[in-house]
Length: 164
Image (cartoon, rainbow, N blue to C red; front, side):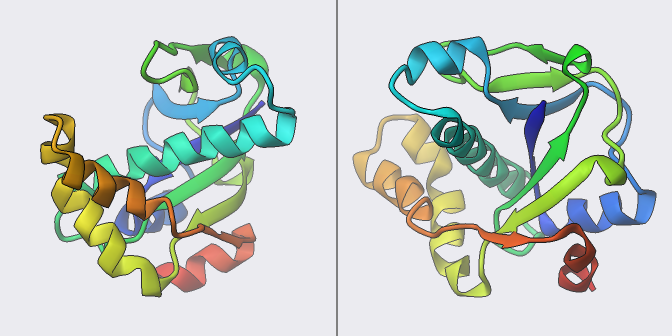
């Protein structure tokens, strides 16, 4: 199953150094039955994009928790055996899953990372998260504005060059 793991640049550097994630469970996003129901008109590619978008939004939360991290969303796409992935999706997060095993670097098939030019938008989105959570429409606009920046695709062998 393809899962999308939200991350940050420092967490990516750690994953590369350790050749995998830490102890399970590992939270990620995937095409779940709840996502299929929520987005009933989409094909598989569209559903995967939605799952990746949810992971990118979760990356904003990780950036909020680590103010020293460069303001760039990081999403890692990994292939994990279906039996190791448990959907914990709810109404607000229809793509949310837990992976029961550590995700090895060899399971990662690509990285999706903001271009450096997006840092202003991403920083503004991170700063607006709390206000957006409390219903501030301007803050929601700033958070949604982060999604106006497409994540760039990187092959796994390129990831180390981004964190060095």
